[in-house]
Image 1 (tube, rainbow, N blue to C red):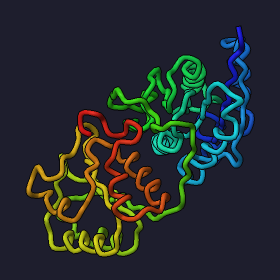
Image 2: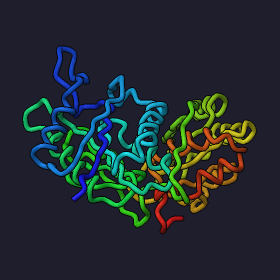
Image 3: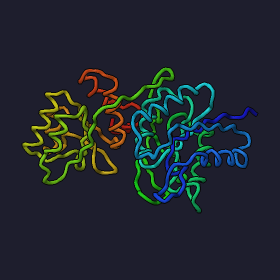
Image 4: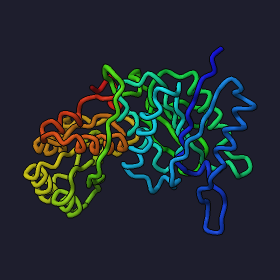
Length: 322
């Protein structure tokens, strides 16, 4: 039987950290050693190669350029390996998983992201189990970008971090859509650097922050109440008008962790549709942010960007809401 070749891309994060006087910090060699042990003891018929992306980072410091580093590595090694595992910090894992799902078109191999809430160097950690599960999942899963965590395989563009300290820290609303960008052939898209604001609405908010964002940002993700309502204030209307005048794209998502928005259902949300704010339906905040950065990076005109933001790409919008 031919041995499967797996590339493990280590980006940093808690899974590969050690305790220090200033808290946990990344350390070279920890993930590599555990991967070698798992290859020897659990997966003797699998060839696992580890590629470390320098510098290793705490995922709180991750940027779109780090998304490009990961997808670039996958593109460079695509023909050599049968699947890819990415170890990543949990703070921004959901952003990176959405970014990979949108950037890698027509995957015919699995890409599995994982990490841990407690480092491999600590007793009773979850890193060992998560890494083992990810290395198994990359051999058995359908093509696409997945998150393997706490015994669950989750859709890369729909996953949310739902808990700050328990091992079972991630969840995703199920969908039948595969976690990959549709296309005729494998292709990698890249992300540029853009000023994108994520702004929640709140009772009694003056609208000054939104007005500033409308004047200075390239794009805005607006987190609305419930199914898509916002305070109908003169300040908010003025900010929305500024976005229209400056051709600043906006997309609305719900502050609720489950369900969807439907702009126009309530009069309190009508001002959004009147000012061409995109209906994000049941997209996660993370997926909406990533999609906005991707849309701006494509450098189309404002109408192309608005269409792209609201058109299903990789399962980030479930079929029942599309």
